[in-house]
Length: 425
Image (cartoon, rainbow, N blue to C red; front, side):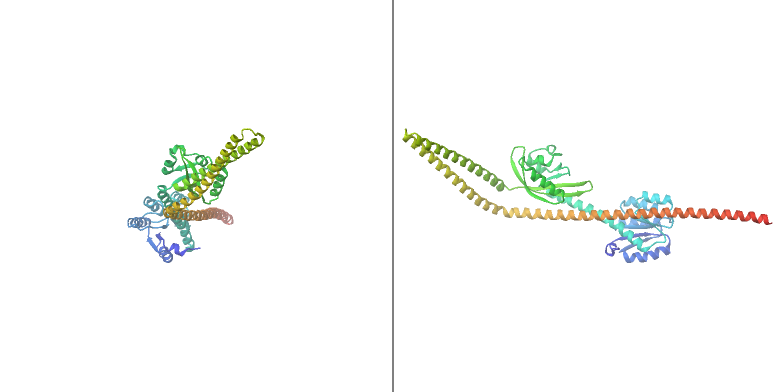
């Protein structure tokens, strides 16, 4: 299907020495393309291309005859490739000499069309060639844009890149500074080797399974640097598709000091409560033991009573400590809530940039997937066209063999006729 909107934005250079054919086809081409440049031979076409390049006016595709005076189409394209190695060309020819076709292949010509020219076929082939070039350039631009974006993030975030074997292939300087180590100590290590040893294997397996299916993983990941200092990184891990395969990027920001302090405070309070409860249980056990002894032993009643009272007071004190720790935990939570509220405005800015980055990355991933699918489809169409060309070559060869056989039969008949004429005379 012809995409008129796409073709309308292209500039075409048409080179043909036959004036009648050139004028006739150019009228049709000018209805489809925004700008059609005409040349009557290869030298004129080369000069025109060179002029447009100096004027910074890009020519998107060349449609050219092969056999022309002054300079043929093959020599013209050879010189043009010295100016622009990427410009595509489609040749038109009335003949299919193998030498010409081999040279066209060496020059990386995109197609050739046999004369007489089918106008719709020409326009369709031009569209396919230009669309392929357009999508290739779009992929390169998207990759460059993503690299620039990641370069900006690299200064603010902690970044790790991994291959499909879960090996670290890149770590930025900010992450190295936080880990307090050298790059050589991290590269080629398994990702699960650099996270904190307390990290659950189940969580890491689930993480990798998620990102391997092209989904994004969000979580806080615990690390420990070379100074045995624990820190948490609010991480986003996602998959990126490259020509070489898949790559996994981990972009994160260190959790705020308030969050880290809260974690440590909770941990200390819980440990203290556990220890206090253990001591209380032990004290109660001692009290019960002493009370039993008091019933069985009537001597030294006063001393036993004082000891029991002391232990009860101690138990009361321990219970008061438990209550104090529980109240402290509640008060600390309230203080943390106020502190987190004060830092919320700063975090919102970072979160906004972060979400924007994720949205752009997801968009880039979708665009790249669509582009890759389209490119695959275009390659399949090119392969089909090459099969058609092979079939045409085989047909032409069969026709030549047939013509040769016909000529040999005519010669044989002529000889026989001459022989009978002599006998009759």
